[in-house]
Length: 112
Length: 117
Image (cartoon, rainbow over all chains, first blue to last red; front, side):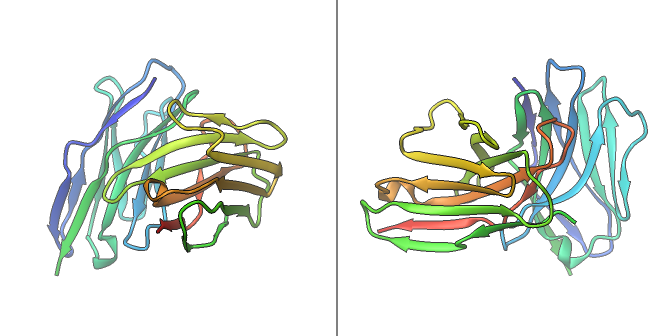
């Protein structure tokens, strides 16, 4: 079984600043994948970034990057140059043989 | 892209009726489709996983006679909430994946808000 923990129910950041969302996970599998999904008020689930566990290099997608620490089972998301459109719920997820397991989410507020 | 269409987006009906929700992959073939339930300000809870042509696999605690899932083709899965009651009111989201392998990202529909009066 997999578990995903997001310890920050809510985060707030000034527009144009950088924010980091924390995520830790636990899995007994050696082959797994990690994802960050964004859910804006429209409630659509949008894939932000994904990381293969076997890759040491941290994934990046434009203003979004991750800090993947495999030994510590940590998978944080960094958002640079925060924009008003980044305001949403962010879910960390771990995919393995049991399927996709989500964390409880972090509500990100962008202050203009 | 990978577009998943979910219909209807919002449905209100009387207690005791059955409601069918459709999930379609528009531009790819989805070997596996997933159904989630989400309560307000909560995370997504997996209800069941369905593979095309096979019976769905339900998560523990999910009544398979209550939530009927059909995945008859590679582009369509349906969730039918039978004899719906107010406690079934929730936000239901489907997702689709090209393969059953865990490394394939799931592409989500826009969700269906179900309100049972």
